[in-house]
Image (tube, rainbow, N blue to C red):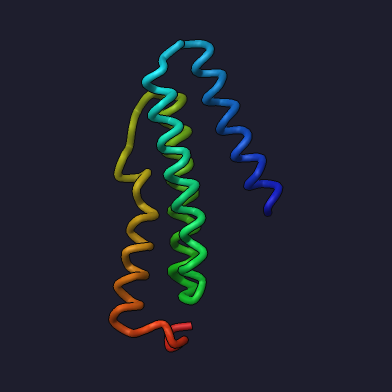
Amino acid sequence: MLTLIILTIFLTIAIMTINFRRNKDIEKLFISLVIFISISIFAGLGNMTRSIIPLFIAHFVFVAVSWLGLIIYIIKNKLYLKVILLPILTLVLYVILVELIGSNGVLG
């Protein structure tokens, strides 16, 4: 699984590089890098949702969908910002649940 994640990261960087060399569009490269870093941060923050397993699985799926949204932006130049920002939904839901119920292991 870790190999697949690392391979996906390198593949995304390679696609961004190839697309930049072909089009010389610095603005698209910058937007792609910002989205790439944002999705990486969302994926890292997703570890805090491990105490609520269904939410953790939903977060993992949303990160994968966001990554596909980034790939679509790089290849087809269509930016689906709502799809890319989906992991924020699970992080906000986690914070709300922790505030309402608490983090003493009641949910997990």
